[in-house]
Image (cartoon, rainbow, N blue to C red; front, side, top):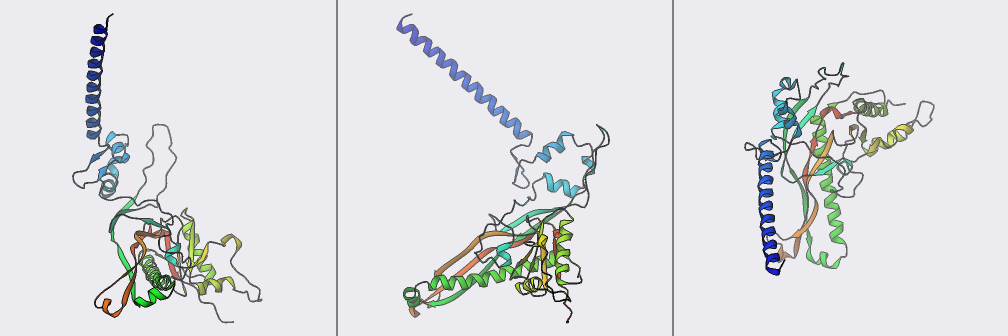
Length: 333
């Protein structure tokens, strides 16, 4: 075979490869279009949300024999993308290092928008053993409520001399710290107010300690680990409580770490919630920031404004996993 024959053979093979690539691209496009037609990766025209729900695919497949008995509002929430399930929470530590603050101890997660929309899902139902292979399995009754909440801006500012900012080392940090504490107090009050308004009212026990632990137990009985927060004054009182004999009762070893001190809880009150954020949690849009600027005639007065702020809100996912109330009053001896 001479050089010209070799060159001609290479050209033919190249043409064949190009044809195969074109055919492969056509097949891939057909598969993608088919996939879109089957919902996966499609966009819901009504809401603009990307629909990737496995639930929708399964429901449409006929594998759920009893799918028609699912409440219409639940089916819509689960399959149409009108609302979203909130992300898993942790503790982002985005509101400062003041560990005694209620807000600093609550589970938190970041959000990307000024409005939080989610489905509040809960159930008192339970699963069941399938009697026989092929028999209808238990369908869980789920309550679903669409929730929409707007972000709040918690802010505080003060004026300070320009010379002081220049001459006194660390004054900016000191002022920022004071402003941050003021914001944390506001955020604490907001979180406690939301918990009280949307959570469950607890019962009053024979003693403050019994009242607090009963609140924790009511959440644990639902299958969730929980903590109860007391004002530091009440926390110390619980630690130093004595029996009629004068002996210290204290917090039982099995509950050490379950009862916590939090400055945001009013004296004489308590707040119990699930540890994983399924009860009360914080949605944070912007973490604590401190800025310096000028307003009005401050420039000619050699003044500056120091502003601190946080954007976020308290979220209640399941009201039954939050218990608030008043502590029992200790009888005078």
